[in-house]
Figure (tube, rainbow, N blue to C red):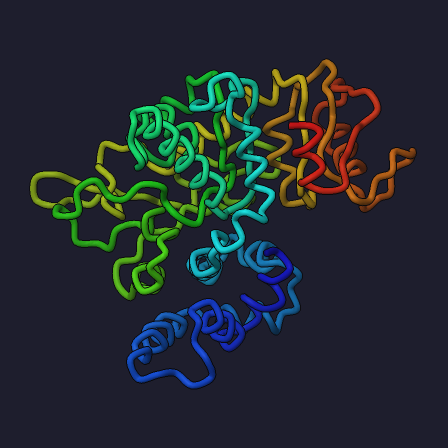
Length: 387
C-alpha cells in the first residue's frame, strides 16, 4: 500500500473521503440510513485536515519524510497522522484478497511441517511494517489449529507465552514481555510497532477512556463496528507506532524512557490504576515493550546464519536501527531476500537493496561477510525457494 498511501489515501481529506466511501460500499448518492457513517467520518477527519493538507502541499515523498521534518518540534501533526495511518489500515480489508495474498503461502511455510499446530523454531520474522495483518493471521491460525486438535470447530485459547511471541510482546503484560526477552523459538518482532493493539482491554469497567483499538475491532467484518472504533471522538489512546527516529538515536542507541514518544502514563481510578486503553497499571510500559522487542532482535541478528531482507527500501531512516542490530556482528551469513535491481554483478547498482546492505555492513559490522548474495525478484519467489 506504500504508493497508494502517498498518492491517494493521504493525498488530502477529500482523497481519504473518496477511498473511505469506496471501502464502505457507499455510492455517489448516500441513502438516508447511511448518513451517520459520513457524519461520523466528517467529525473525525476535521482534526486531521491540516496535517493532510501540509503533507500534500509540501511535496513529501513519504509520510516518514513529513514526520521526520517535524521531529523535535512542539507540533502534534506527526502523532496525528498515526491515527490516520491506523484508520487507513483498518478500513482497508486485506481479508477480501486473502487467498491471493503472498501471506497465505508464507504462513503455511512458518508452521512446523512435523507438528502442524506449532510454528517453526528456526525462524524469526522482524517487521518494519505497521500493518498488523501478519500477526493476526498467525494468531488466528494457531488458535484454529489448536481448536481442531481439541475436536472443535472454533479457535482455542493459546498459551500466553506462545501468543505473546507472535504478537511481539504487545499483549499479556509482564508475561508477554518476558516471552520476547527469554524465548528461543519463533517470534514476530514489530520493530516500529503496530497500527492496532492485539488484545482488548482486560477490564472495561474500571476506566473512563476509550479502549485501545484491538484486533477484534480492527479485523471485524462488521464495518459499522470497525468504523466506530477507528473514528472515536473522545479518549483515543495512543497508536503504538514508533517512527525510526522515535526509537533510535543517530548513533544506534535506543532512546531513554524520558525521550520516548509514547508516554503510556498510569492513571489513578479509585483503588486500581490503569494505563490508557485499559491495560493494567502493572503492565510494562511501551518503552519497556520496545526495549524487549529490539533487544531480542539484536540477539537474533547476532547469531543468525541466514539473514534475508525482504521488501525493504533500506532508506536512510532505518540505518540507526540497523546499527543497533548489527554492530559488532562478525563471521559469515547467508545473505538473501528480494531485490529487483540486483542481477548478481559487481558493483551493484546504487539503488539496489544489495548496495545499501553493503553500505550498512561497512559502517556497522565490517567483519561480517557472506558468499555470493542470492536475491529473488519478489516475495512470492522468496517464499517458494527460501523459507
